[in-house]
View 1 (tube, rainbow, N blue to C red):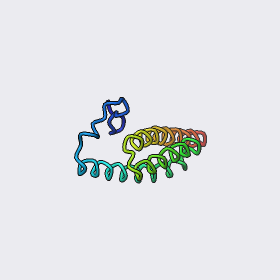
View 2 (view 1 turned 120 degrees about the vertical axis):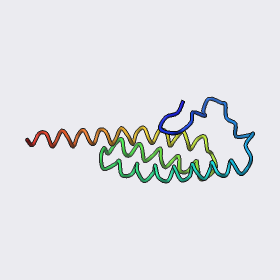
View 3 (view 1 turned 30 degrees about the vertical axis):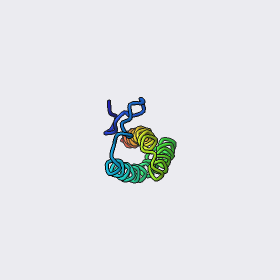
Length: 105
């Protein structure tokens, strides 16, 4: 099962030991790039919903740190949490903006 494009690998069925070093390096590079982009979007989500955006930024930062030290599974887990909080922050903020705009009419 995947959530927002990431595989569920925390179940102990990791196949990292059977991967070649080239595959592992490519996967780490992809996770680092994803962590960087999620971190940027999570900081933007702070403008929509302060609490949700800050939580998303925290998890995105943790994912970025895990990716930089090579902990791919930890990075993917934290990126997944950051995405969830970031989406929630965007939705809550958008609903708040719509609510404020509808009050003015």
